[in-house]
Image: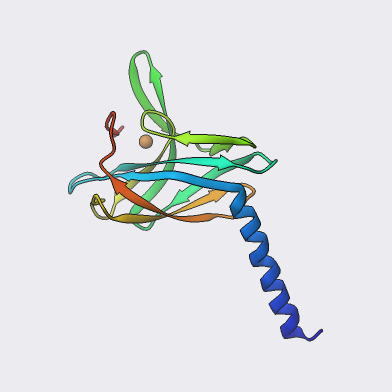
Length: 151
Ligand SMILES: [Cu+2]
């Protein structure tokens, strides 16, 4: 086998592998909360269905519309809602759907570079401990329920 054929085969195998991995983590119901001028932060919410036999971890997220993106958890401490970053990431147990929703786990977008306008979409990259990263397109919505407050 000549060198070019070898490289082509390797490229093919690599893309097949990433497809297989990507299919094990299925992201659904993703949306980002709209923001207006003057707001520096917003949230992204979604469900991650881990269909593989292996536990995984959402370790990082990124989007070009925010200077900084973090994985946050909201906790009720003595009647007050607080949120903090999960430096170890968010566990995604095998065969389970993990919900990121307002008042609970969420993706926090900080240092927004522009207002998130309802009806538009933003690109978001999800990075995992084991699986290949996923690039998704997230619609911007007004959302419902409680607002997403800053620290
Ligand atoms: Cu937050």
